[in-house]
Length: 167
Image (tube, rainbow, N blue to C red; front, side, top):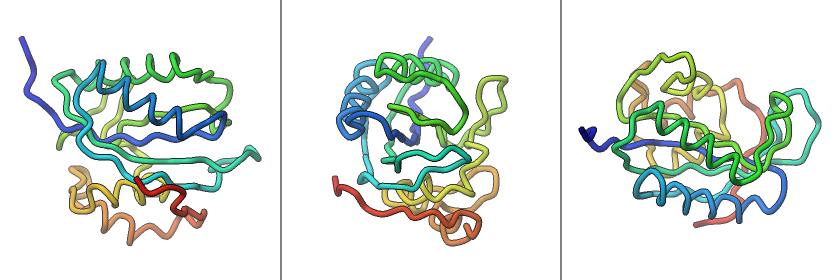
């Protein structure tokens, strides 16, 4: 039985290796394993979040359509991270690629492995700024705010996010 096609919003981040090339490879893997990528943001450079001193990150957001369940999407994205060299050493540590599911359609999901919408979405400009570029009017099913409103309301995150490469 096939599931109804869902629109999935994810973000990519990384600060080790040739991150922009890793992003391109990630897009290819998503299209091969999960479904058609329908929109991508530009790539942004962001100061590292968290307690570990490290290089700036590159971040971007993208939208794809899939018939896979949220948990299957997560498992596939974790597999893609592994294929692309992700080693899970320490929380907030440097990484080649980090893929986060932000929204899965308009669904609210609480699963032992997965919470959607992403629980830290509203306090992270490195997520909100790229997402705002591609989906400013998308409404978060938890708080009923659009991405644009969440970005405008976010006073917690003062780290600099700047355009690195327009796509």
